[in-house]
View (cartoon, rainbow, N blue to C red):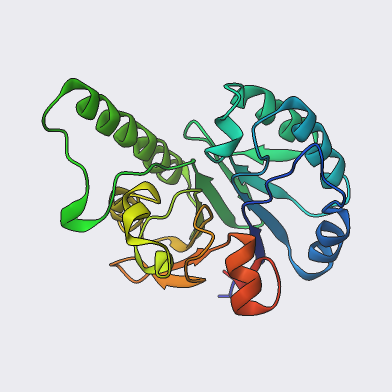
Length: 242
């Protein structure tokens, strides 16, 4: 029985494209296209979720010559028009993971969602107390359900889970303790560990965390915020094989 060819995956998050920028990502995207088989964008692709920022991002993505998968981040929701951002990404050829969608490419599955904040371990926020807290926790659980549904739809032997928020605290080391509950949620890792075919998890959001950790079940987790990846690897993106 022949072994499946390994896929080289590049992942980057927290581009924060601004309408006032003086440079672009076209050169970086073109370079990534020569080094990887697919590119994953881990959210906060725009700085305020403005239409003008989405247009600039779409122009940059014209330099990509490999398949691209993406999730949105909290910054992409700031203007209250995430569907507009998704439309520009889709028109640029990006497959956006959001409502339980999953995609397969060359024997590898990709599923994901933005994820949510809420905290980790025993400190994770629970559905207890005032209605506003219960509503927030319910929204977090619904976001997690998107990830579960997407992963469940895949029939591939290998899969990558794509997030913006962190699923573990291990890739957040170096962030201020005060903001840790706002950087991710343990439920995401619990969901990932239900699926034996998940070979890696990627996320962004944490600009001062660590580049790599793993779920309680041992699945590698990569913090792909470009600031973190650059500091630890010398390049502003993760590069790994599945």
